[in-house]
Image (tube, rainbow, N blue to C red; front, side, top):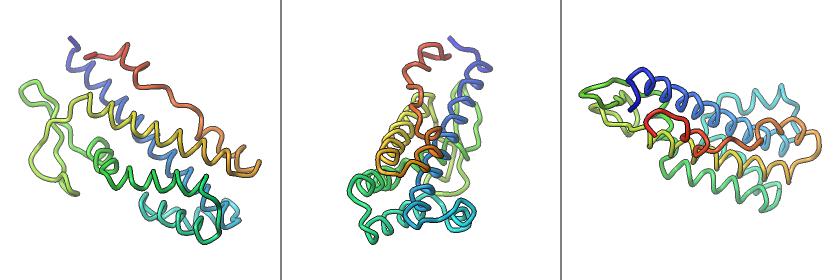
Length: 178
């Protein structure tokens, strides 16, 4: 059985990995938008930098449709939007922005805003692992689609973001509480 300190460290690692994967997805969507509009990086950052994830994806989809970019990039963007609308963003927000506390040996998370606001709710490590796995799948799928669709300069720029992420199964073998 993991100690509270070991469990805390593992939870922090999972939450950090959730943040990194979300950020990579945001960056991939931004790069797709910049490519669709033939923008340099500086101009692209101005256009997409202030957008949250759903507006950013919706803009990329609308541009891709309007510019007839092809199903090979539109379909994965639409799938990502549906995954986020189905609650991935809420699960990510709960993991990242929730106020963590321990009561009676259970980890609880309290939210002060969003759809999950209210009294503390249990957030087991298994839920964090599931959120991370879903993010990794989305990141890999969108990244691979972008790499197949994009021109060479963009492939070089985005290769680090589309790299295969390690699987949650690999992590859990040596994790506390597994």
